[in-house]
Length: 121
Image (cartoon, rainbow, N blue to C red; front, side, top):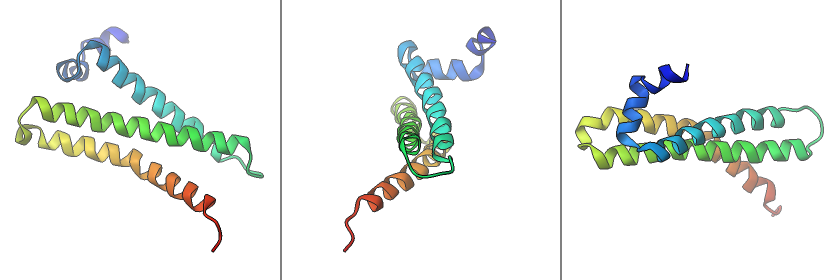
């Protein structure tokens, strides 16, 4: 499986845009960020009074969404620095959409945290 991934078009494109150590960091951050989101959602979905599992889940979801969304933005910025804008415009739109799917829930969590800590007026 790993040998097939190393010779895939996706990994070749990734190696063209990001060099070896940074491509591993990029893929690792997306993987671990996605795992953090899944674990965070499962912890926040527990029924019962709000406690440590929900708080840890919110933190994991917040960090995972920020990490994965940031990696898509980083890839788009590096892609934009290496290739002419009009030749990669569809790719930039795609990575912007992917980043938005992670930054949307991140913004909702930040909004909820701010609302929860506001003093009643």
